[in-house]
Length: 150
Ligand code: HEM
Image 1 (spheres, rainbow, N blue to C red):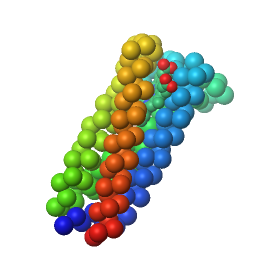
Image 2: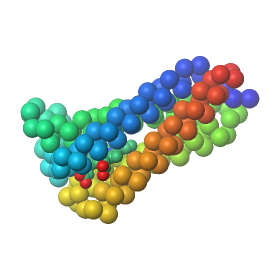
Image 3: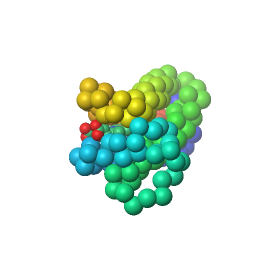
Image 4: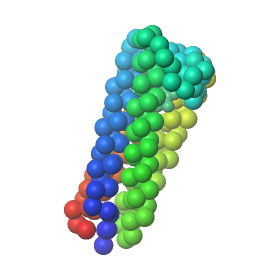
């Protein structure tokens, strides 16, 4: 019998919302040619942890990373709770797949920057964004179904 903690799906949905925000800011980053707004640096942005600047390109790329990072924290926490859920194997499979693909997507984001927006890598980053959000949404739905039953 699934036993997900009562509000774990709230963390998962909040994580999905942040990933959606990351996707949206990412699209603006691309549209405004701001992909190198943090230079070829990762995880720092132009050598700084917090860039104090009014440069639009830097702010777009920086907040794209911030939204992705906060989404990662929430989605990973929800996945951690899901992995501790006894009984429901499908919830754990969604959680594992989500975290693996999200980590791969974040690493790929870094590689895109290191390789100065190499087009195939950038296209792969867009494609993996769809898979990442789909998996995180699936995990959130599974968790809310589990919570409702527990
Ligand atoms: C901290 C990790 C990340 C870094 C360093 C990063 C980096 C970038 C960069 C440099 C671009 C612009 C690419 C270009 O102009 O060609 C971009 C765009 C984008 N990113 Fe990320 N990204 C990260 C995480 C994520 C995550 C987690 C997602 C989604 C779940 C995501 C989704 C997108 C999308 C959808 C675009 C727009 C692509 C387009 O419109 O063609 N990124 N990212």
